[in-house]
Image 1 (cartoon, rainbow, N blue to C red):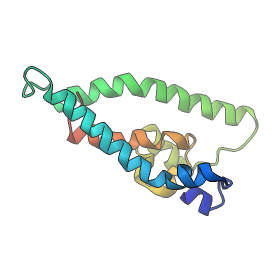
Image 2 (image 1 turned 60 degrees about the horizontal axis):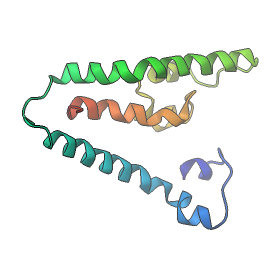
Image 3 (image 1 turned 90 degrees about the vertical axis):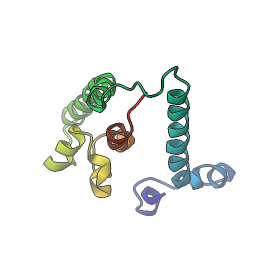
Length: 134
């Protein structure tokens, strides 16, 4: 992974690394492809697949289910870092982009964000806007 190459995380050795972890960069596209298939299958399985809610309503519905927990987690991360007396590594624009779920759009912003593991949420926002969620 690119994080191992940069020395940000230690490498993992052994057969598990070769079998699964070493191929991590390929699992993400597979996940998105499989998720898209499942969502489309669910949509086509409806009685009337043509009856969809408007895009804005669909994005609002998904965001209202996900964003509150995300925002609370982001705030808790910030509080913990500040309580430990550590300086916040992220620049102001990184925090701003992460607050609006845009941190995954720029790789160096993703790597400096508070909650690195939630990059995929910023990748899902454009999909919600382009392909109405079911």
